[in-house]
Length: 562
Image (tube, rainbow, N blue to C red; front, side, top):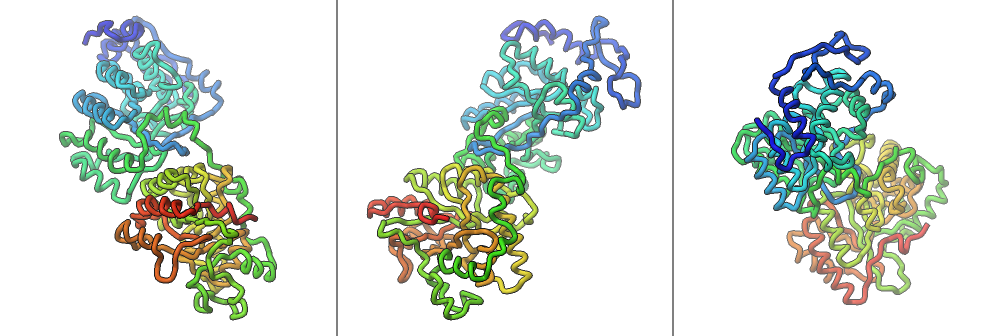
């Protein structure tokens, strides 16, 4: 293959014959001393031209690096409303062009990790990627197809360095470390040596991914079949996810292109998220670092016990438990005497001193698509609300990390209150010491896990919403003793998860349910779960309706102080 100076950099044209000779094996081999200290072999073979060996002293490079390792990036802690697309395998020009056209239609940008070998074989393909405005990263040299984790330090350095040299020569003056200075190992195969070699060569990050629908068992499937298998439990992708798609692997005609587009339209665009490059994700000001649970700001405000007296706890229940009209008897207020029940709040409202204020609250947890719809409606009418978050799910234990902290932080940064709805939807109508022990563990874990991600925002409040609104004396005492300052049910529970249409929910919110209706000081109980399909749509009608009647909407912390 000949190459002419038709838009290619001077360095690439000048060195092309050298690279081509390397690829075509039109060279002879020399033995050079290996730099890897622990190597079993004395020498490695390097292909060279004109009796020259172009090698960095990797032994000295390793010493200078002093054991530092690049950071693995498989997804980002970020509130940027975006998902990253990463591609490899650019040999098929037709597939590549189709994918580039799809990305244009989606107004999307992506990262293509290309090998030195691909740059030499398919320079026109690489040039087209650059022309379309996408990020190009170092996919390695590509001459060695061994899993990177099986290579020694020297061979890894050579693989990375030669990949970068090809990329730099190809891009010429347009090469920028802040854009092109990212490395993705072959097969996203990473171990400590890979990370050390990358760091030694100046790479701060090694990019892999957390979503990969290109699997061996999917190779002969259609796009729909792959989606059905891989995304069977997915409603939407998360902010900061990185989706990897290999372009030269699937065998069915059009499957790769269709997969690229359908993932976007089914799992990204419904949340109003953009598709962007890895560089754009990493460099965003919205990237954050979570802390440990113990180091999180205000993490210790909720702990196993504050050793509060029975009298103090009872006064907290009288003064700071906001109840519900239907929770008004010994059967629903378990463990209380009749005299105590008389003193417990059952109205479920906040005294707003005559101000026409409504408090919107949302329980549980949901997908990005569902929660973003709610946030967008609230933004539309400049309304702030209170979100009571269930931190875990059925597949997580209290020792596990939260599944989607980026969405939690996005809620916080929009200025809403965030309270606890437990880790595992643990009902607090408890009766035994063993249940109390489990409840303490749950609510402490929930608060501290949220504090890791939003403790610095001021949004995390010492507010607690009982799952199903069920309570007992022991349960309420336990919540207050752990450090919560308000336990809040509410006067208007919508059961929005049961609504069969938006109009049904609108009618409830405007006309009331039986004898119950929304009025000044009302705390409206709704949900952000995916089963609450019509909540956002209903609020798009209900909020302006109540505003037209002179009401305003506030978050609980505007009135509940501690």
